Image 1 (cartoon, rainbow, N blue to C red):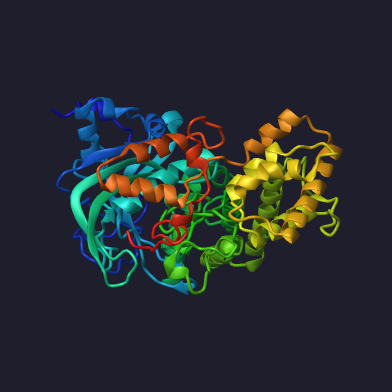
Image 2 (cartoon, rainbow, N blue to C red; image 1 turned 135 degrees about the vertical axis):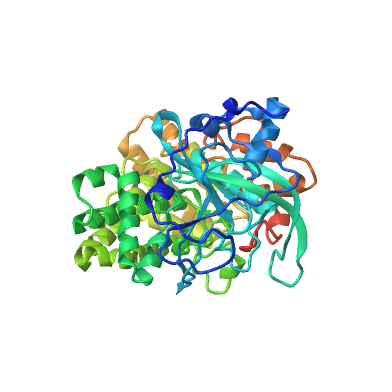
Length: 545
C-alpha cells in the first residue's frame, strides 16, 4: 500500500527551467547541446529501490517526514520517488549543460552525465532547494557513461555531505541514499579489472548546483546572450541584494557578483583547510558559484598531516589537487570564472578586484580559524612571523613541525585544548595530551622542537589571560573530535555491501555532532590503523563511481 500523496506534498517552484533556455531536442541521447542551459530528461527506472539512509533534519526543512523508516509503506514510497521511479506533482526533471577545466585543461561540454535534478522545492521559511539524483541514469551529457552510481561512492557522498554540514563547512546536503536492486559494472582503479557492484542513488540538495563551468561553456562558445541570461538568473535568484542594487546589463552587477563568488569560495576553502578535507578533483565544473562544496568523489580526510597528500589516483603523478595546494587552485579556478564573465564586464580591473577580495577573505578566514584552533584571541597579518612571541610564528612553526612528523591532524588539534598552561609544567606533562596523536615515537630533535613550540604557545595564552573554560570551549568548537576518516567510510561501505547498515547509521549519527565528546563512541575518533595505510578505499581512490 502506497503512502497517501498528501504525505509527500512538496512545493515545487522550478525557476531554472522556467527562466532559462531549454534544449529543444526531447530525445535522450548523447550529443552536443547548443544555446541551452539544460535538457529535459526523466530518470531511468530501477528494478527494486530500497531506502538505505535518510537525513531527517534536512527532510523536515523540505516538508518531508523526519523518520520514514518507522512506516514501511512510507519508506517504500520514498524509495520509489528518490530512485526516480515515481515523479511527484510539480517535478520537472532536467540535466544541466556546462563545461569546465579538468586538471588544468579545457574539456568543453561536460554537463550532468549522471545527475538529474527533479526540480526546486520551496521549503521551510521559503528557502529554495534543488533536489538532484546522482546515479539516476543516462542524460544527453553522459558521453560514454551509463549514468549510474555504485553503492560505495554513494555511501561516501551521503555521509560526507552531511558530515561537512555539521562541521560548519559550506556544502551541498544529502537527503537520501537508495539502493537500486541493480548491478553496475565499474573498474574501480582503471586497471582492467571491472566487476559488478551494487547500484545506488543519492538525492543531493542545495539552493543551486550552478558551477563555474556553466558560465565557462557559454563564454567559450561566444554565446554572450545565453551567458548574460544565465548570469542574470543566478544573481536575481540567489543574490537578490545585488539584483536590487544593479540592473541587468550593468557591468557593475556582474563585477560585484564576482567579488561575492570569490569571497564565498575563500570561506569554503578556509573551512576545508581547518578540518583537513581534501576534495580531490577541484575542476572548474566542481566549483559552486554559491561557495558550496559539491561533487563528493575521490575526496579524503588528512590522517597524518601531509600538505602534499591527495586521495585521487588520477592525480597521483602531479598532485595538482593536493591538500596544501587547494587555496591556490581555488584562485586559479576563479581566474577561469573571471575570464568567463569578462564579456559581461568589459574591463579587467573589476575582475582583479574580485581576485584581491579572494586573497583578503582567505587570509581573514584562515587567521580566524587558526586563532580558534590554537585558543588565541586573534592573529594579525601585521605581526612579525619571525618572532616566537607572535601568533604568526606559532602557526608557521606548527605547520612545519606537523609536516615533518607523522602526526594525526584531527587528534593533535583537539588535544591542544587539554594542554596544561602552568609556567612550571614539566616536559612530560606538557607533551602527555598530544602523545596519542603521533603515529610514531618523537625523535629527540622533533621532541625538543615540539616542546619549544608548546612553551611558546602556553606563554602567549597566559599573556592573553583568557578564562580557561571559555578558551577550551572555543577550541573544541573549532577542532572536531569526529571526522569521516577514510578507513571508517570504507568499513561502512563493506558492511553495507554485505547487507549490514548498522555502521552506516552509526557514522551518520556520530557525525551529526562532530564537536561533542560522545562518550562510548571514542573508537570512531581513533587515528588510522596500520592496516588502512595503503588499503584501497582507505588511502587512494579513483573517480570511478
